[in-house]
Image (cartoon, rainbow, N blue to C red):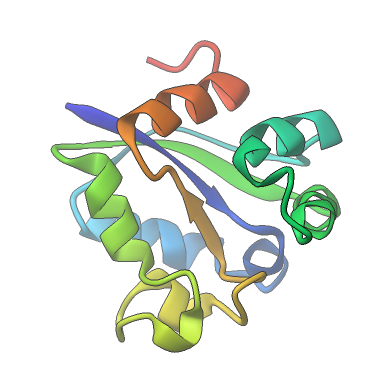
Length: 135
């Protein structure tokens, strides 16, 4: 069973979409192994988005992700990484297919409701940042 990492981002949490997003995840056949509402530290956000550290939006991304609570999850399913990315939809909610999480709950590229690992290697690294003891 493949595992991936997911975040319900601050704006989606503030707007009360957590239950709806989790319901979509479960309806798509995922198992939610671990789930926690946390406020991400600056260090965690910088580590999570390390591949973007040289980009001009890095500081704003870190600031947005640490400003208020998020929901972090470990999801399991056959082909979990691709399946979660498909369910999330395109990064830009305006380009996301109807029925995807980002089409339904995203506001903009920067406030697109969710994060998901883009590879098995990223999933392993990202899960290690937030879930040391999740099986």
